Image 1 (cartoon, rainbow, N blue to C red):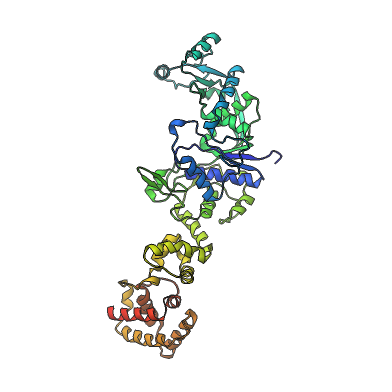
Image 2 (image 1 turned 135 degrees about the vertical axis):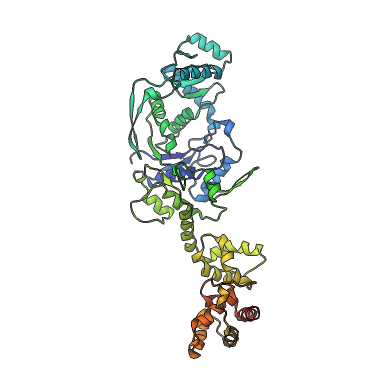
Length: 501
């Protein structure tokens, strides 16, 4: 790629970052790294009415947690700063004026009431009101009033907007990296507002000017922005600037039915749609981090929503994603979100973690429950249970019997406790008492030798033994449990089971 690759993620700080936005950031990051380029974050906060305090910091923290932090942003390598649009607002007036002077834009003084009246008139005639070439010279614009009159009204403080003058009778043949060639009829486009009399640009003008000044080479964004592509290309043309290459990513779809994944879907089905918890006065919307997901797992499953490398491989490190990523392998159609598959990904990353690291994560849960377990013992317990877990938060339920004797016994499992079981369990206690090398393999050998020698069937000992220690027919290898809880506790639990069952 001859041109220096510079791509951006440009969210508005209007609330928490949706998982769809995270995927857009990720694909920009992967593309930049694959092409030895730069990934930068720009905050598009020109719409001050929708600004939400804390949202900007949330976006930064989410990208850091996921391991896809930008190369340039607010307070970091500000080569093309400022990276907040609200701090760049003095720039945009000049570019709006340039468009007026070149005849590519015009002033519009229409009041909301006048626009409502025009809209109603069109509807009465069975038409749809579009502010464009069909009516812009019938409305209150600088296209029909003199330059002097226009200047006088602006000087008097009258409210106005600057609208783009969309060309007429033209078919735009544009190229999208993901969608291929796309066509747009300029007669069907409206004259979008670019600038308002309060000195603030709209998204369209600020976005184009900033992408040009920040030397953005590729615009990779969600497909909801595809209808804006013709306007943006026409703006580049009006300024006589080279347009970046465009790639519009497919939507992330609901797990069931049609439509874009929303927060409501997550609330209804019990899964997060945000990377981190988002707290408001109304309550907390859950995030992947607080739900116990590993950031690597989130990155992995998001990468495969709409992209694949052409193989059956599903587990990718960030480095592998960078090496394999190609925009030409992004699908056009929406990608269905699968919460169960996400848990599967987390399970894969959990079992790859070092036992000691997982033990460290499990420790606070135990402390909260009143147990202070020595590190080596906890690491051993984690190694025995992690294969069946999706999250560290599930460890307690899977391992409580390592820390506390069963208070009750599973009713179904207790059917394995027969009339001859107490006597056999007493004999088992005698065998266990004699064992000096209390390791899992040695205990297993001695107990099984005793059973063989006395012609005792496996089911007569193993199931009652497990019920005694665990309270149910669950848990890892029985003799691993025996080793971890120790001789004294093992004998105590068998005695308790004999008296209770």
